[in-house]
Length: 286
Image (cartoon, rainbow, N blue to C red; front, side):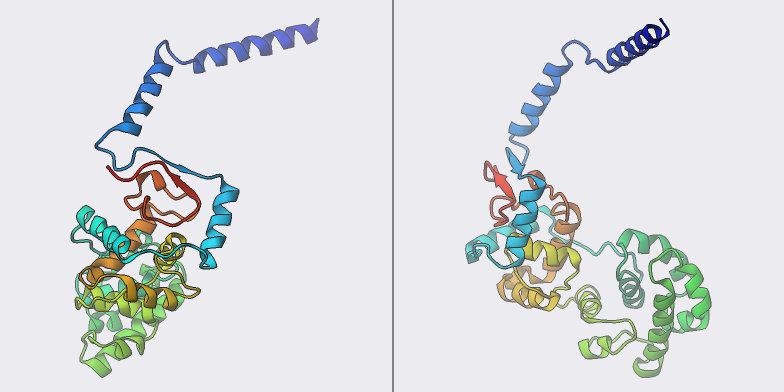
């Protein structure tokens, strides 16, 4: 008897819960209609793009990493960057900064960290120190305390103070407009130098981060085993008129659309041009 009572109670609870989750009359039809509207709305950029299953996507990424994708034509590359430019004519770095020095510091801090995470820490830091002289005076311990929410903060604090001292001693407190001089600064590598040259000095450099490296290889636009390989390939294929903003467009594309685990191909403005075999596009942009 007790067993029947418990079973009956569980059944009643299950039915009650099912009733709570049951769709209201007409809801299914409404959702279906909404889905059709989104899929075929002329205002959308693609009618439909479907991704293959995770295992197949992994295989597609492996194939891309081995450089087995079809080559882009010059016309396709031109069209891809024309679309990027039309969608975002004047892209900017998402790292908050005040001047060339704070840009340099922000990029150094962004290594193996997100821009959003860096932007949470730097306002307080830059309020106290927006020049090499102020940063050096602030000292490593205080800098470390201000950036402790950022990964590798101890090493980065040491580098920020050290590069500030070097700027004072060798460059009159100014950020040099020179690749070799930038890369000689503590904590500054090729990627950081490229960002500073591009954003602070308007040089058409292409800084390769994890997003651009992924986009270049996955799409087949610029395949390479190292960041330098991808950089050199992009510098070769990106039309000169688009080169100044190319790395911004590609970073933003990798950060918000061509995601690592589950790329949003249904929102991608170059889905029909992309050579990645992990997606199946049913239509070109409208």
